[in-house]
Image (tube, rainbow, N blue to C red; front, top):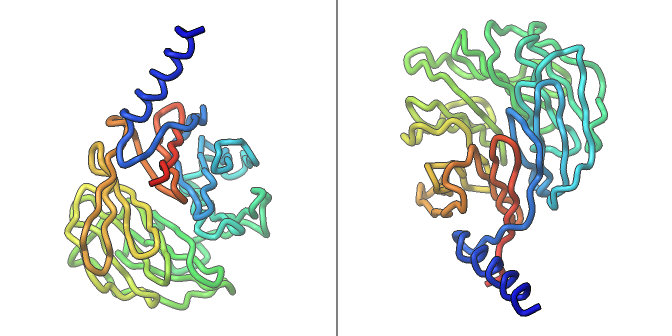
Length: 263
């Protein structure tokens, strides 16, 4: 009995030492996926080909959605968990799902708008959404009535190739691994470029942008441009996100969940 108890205590101690910034391993979600994200409530979303799975913040599978009609889901934006936006880039269509991943309304064909090469889509305020038109280097906003209401100037002199974008608090943030992180206002006007390169994806949280740099998660204040660092417990992970005192670390075949220790 003493040997068993000692073994359990040793595992606990090792677990506490192995984590950085006061996070301790909690559990794993065993699931493959080519795209991973979270919402502000801590729910986890995993995309695998034409399927999206939603898990609770504790890693319990809640809902799934899949459709063979539109093919592979390129991205998901759950900034509004009641209206999760899915983008099918091969067919250039978007659909919205409710909080139970039930489809809302009809699919929206992006070719109905004046765009040439819509490579990225993300949600926007008041049930709108943004389109990045790579062909014309323009950012276009579509409102809840499916009408264009904002269009940025052409960025052809910079010619960014954005890999990810997200809106929060009326700020649209997009990243180009070669030139940096771009900040647009609610009207689509480019307000600044932060020269942080090699960032392919990020988490937009309140007034900060979180992005991975090796075995670290950097939290950069968008106003002060100051940085805080979270040392990740896994050095070879694909992606990491922090929501409500939990750290989610993406591996090819699972998502590991860590809890923040009480200070």
